[in-house]
Amino acid sequence: MSSPLPRIAIVIPCYNEEEALPITSARILSLLDRMAADGLVALDSFIMCSNDGSRDGTWQVIEQLHSDDTRIKGISLAHNRGHQYALLAGLMAVRDMCDAAISIDADLQDDPEAIVRMVEEFRLGKEIVYGVRSSRATDTWFKRSTAHAFYSLQHHMGLDTVYDHADYRLLSARALDLLSEYGESNLFLRGIIPQLGLDTAIVTYERHERVAGESKYPLAKMLSFSVDGITSFSSKPIRIIFVVGLILLIIDIAVAIWVFASYFSHSTISGWTSLIISIWFLGSLTLMAIGIVGEYVGKIYTEVKHRPRYAIRDRLL
Ligand code: UDP
Ligand code: MG
Image (cartoon, rainbow, N blue to C red; front, side, top):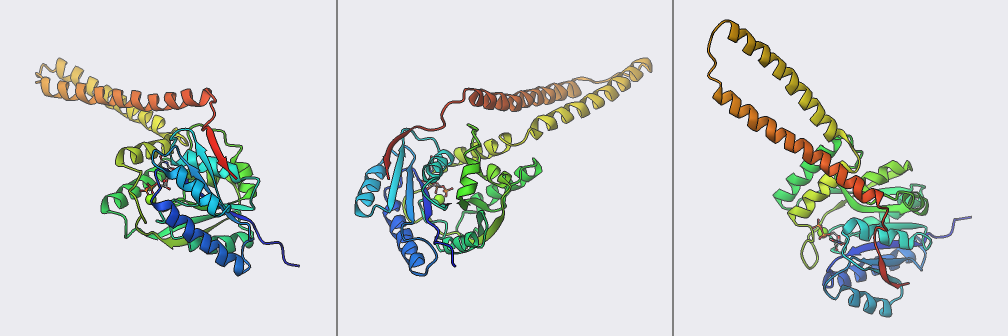
């Protein structure tokens, strides 16, 4: 006997996506129709739009789409909390409504055709299926190189992330249940998912140009995202600062011995240059160390408050 067809939820975080959403949802609905006709997914598979406090007409667009076809559902966050939180809110909203959820951006940069292969892997028993970019040809040179630096830095800091995988992935209902146990306020899903300890698979896909609208990830947001990625999972930066301090102390002792020796041998030291260099060097190092520790203290501060991570204002189910 064949098992019943899985009900799949496609979760789309949306921030100011009024232009892209109608195109994206139509494309995904027709894909779901095709997959249902091919006997791959249940007929009542659906889309969950998670509106991240958009300032444009995104929510009105979602309401319209929902009234045209109730397979398009939505939740609306009261504030703009950022991609990760909008995504989590969407995933948690569909947790009891589906057998697996697939998260995808609203701009069709991630090729929806990969969904077919993700579901096939899921039906073979995989609980997590990562979408991995086969090329970054459509990204700018700058985005490509910063992304590369970001992944390698994470790996050096001991973070277990999948290379060239963003947040395009399938999570089984079981993975969603496990994910719901992670209550951290500083959310970095790419770091958490590999920790769930479930069977995984990888599906590659072409990354395309954004279908409409513009990127919501300017450089400053990308940088803060990468810092979060590291400091939420690793305390290596603090240790590195400690080791650097230790090495400097050893050098300092060596220099002190040398200074004493030259004092007794009555050779004069023209000290100004070395003095000024070491003052600046140690000063900036100290400030940097305080900054890194401060980053962790700030994280602890937001974690201990145990505030809800988002507030849902509206639901269309
Ligand atoms: N997004 C969001 N909240 C934000 C910023 C972005 O929900 O504060 C969504 C956005 O609507 C899109 C996804 O996150 O669906 C990825 O954003 P974008 O495509 O702008 O990023 P890029 O692909 O340029 O890195
Ligand atoms: Mg994009």
